[in-house]
Length: 173
Image (cartoon, rainbow, N blue to C red):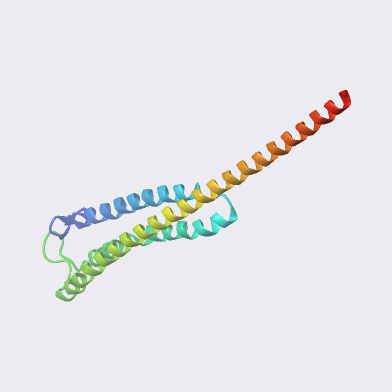
């Protein structure tokens, strides 16, 4: 089995390297998604903000799940071939000419998927920034509203104090 793990799939890439890449990509993507989700969670202050933010969190989680799908499929295919002893361990080709052709046709698809996911993440990042800006505006508006209310209350208190002073002055006279 150890020979099968070290079998070179592509020049410089063994099955063990592929598994390592899948794991590292998954961890890295998971950490990035986790950080973005944590940032988004801080903006959930009300039901309205949750309605906007929760779908963004869900999209980030979907990206995490899909990010390494093609690599996992490739590793699964190679494992099945090795398990069925269709591949001479220690040399030779892993795949038939037809299988190599199919796999090579998938490589651009993999690159397209990665680019699509990169653009999707970028778009989600932009949406997060927009939501963040909107929430900051909402917070600013709330602060302004609270300040106006405080000023009105202060004005009412001042008016009450002035009225009390007049009443006391009138009582002295």
